[in-house]
Image (cartoon, rainbow, N blue to C red; front, side, top):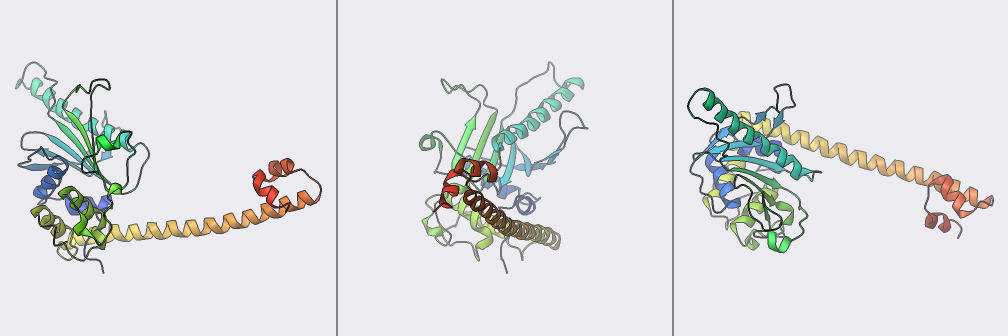
Length: 299
């Protein structure tokens, strides 16, 4: 029996972390990623957002939060690598931008403010990703070897075009501390990465992880301590995940069988063609095999 939920699964992460009562936990997690920020209070906002029109596709974020000072945070967990993930996060950032502008436009229409002010409160897109993102200047870019940060700035001088939009990635795939050696974590960033990456394997909170953040994180993730509604949701998510793994394993196994059978048929065809006097090039064209493979059948 597992003790803690697999919070690398984005659905489980959403159920376990992004629920009322865990605002302080999420604030402390964000402060690890953004060490210069002090988040006094977080408020969860609706995670379902329409596009430019109500008829447009709906985007569902893992979490959208607003701090007491009005700063906005989009938080995502991504367990598997995904093409154009950075572009996806850029698209997500457009929603809080439009949200802020819509609120200002309503204030103009109601006479609360005049004229229209396009100034934005800071927006932070924070991603926990269980893979490595390729960077050109890793030695200069990464914080604690795990966090990459991006802003909108000049490629020539580094001057910010705006200080209102920032992207942070905690790249769990870069964690070099192996499971079973939590004492090797050298910083709170590595401790957080270790906790997220190995939560489903752990039987207890590592003794060295003494910061209040980790007590809250492990308490929130402990299956037995969840309410019955949350237990049912997490159980359904984990069952779906296991079914998906089993389906993928079966598909790979069947694919290997089929590939082996097809390979044997091509080999028989190539040998027959060679014996009947066809050239290596002709056999390659007929079977789709490489020249090296066909030449091996001549031996």
